Amino acid sequence: MARQKGIFKIKGTVGGMTFYSSQDGDMVREKGGVSGDRIANDPSFARTRENGQEFGMAGSSGKVLRDSCRTLMMDAHDSKVVDRVTKLMMGLLKLDTTGARGSRIPARGLASPAGKALLKGFNFNLQAVLGSVLVKPWVLDKARGAVLINDLVPINDIAYPSGATHVLLRSAVANIDFVTGVSDVQVGDPVIMELNGTSNNLELRPAQLPVGTGTVMYLLKIEFTQIINGVQYHLKNGANNALAILDVD
Image (cartoon, rainbow, N blue to C red):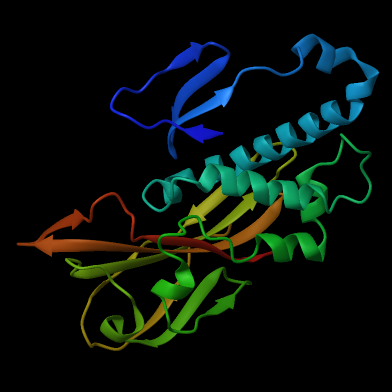
């Protein structure tokens, strides 16, 4: 692919070249390729069809994860999160050791220790990676779905953006079945703290644990706000908010 330069930007197909806009700018590529009918039926394209089926499955599974966490993600994601989640699901799919090529699915890969390790630590917003925002150690009590943080001093232990006066921390526990698409996500109430030198002992957990037979994930979200005259304002578009998967069962 090549980039368009100049004052006038072209969109559409001209002389066998396709001009289009993307997140990476104004691009141009050569039109061409094999017909869809040949790809769908020609035996020589069997591998291509298998790859397409698996990529579609990775995309569908990624959508299940994003839809399940949509409320949390709304103000805590980057512009590439869809692509990154799909790539993650492709990695999980490749850990499926029982499905035939073209029929492998992320859910079976996720059932393995290696699959759980791959999902653990995933950050939905690479502009605000949890480990860079929160520098204080945390402990996860899986039995209660609780995240414990002791002696947290916000002004020292949290990397906050300019203009923020308060920080909100909340945890969530999700039970997601990537085969059926059924999920139950329980989100705890936020703990709101002023960005000052006060020490805090936190226990973040939802009121109840989710139900289901899917994969259980433990998440932590950090949001920043500005409070002026008692009114809470969210900063910009959430570019500094962090959301990550702490662990997977």
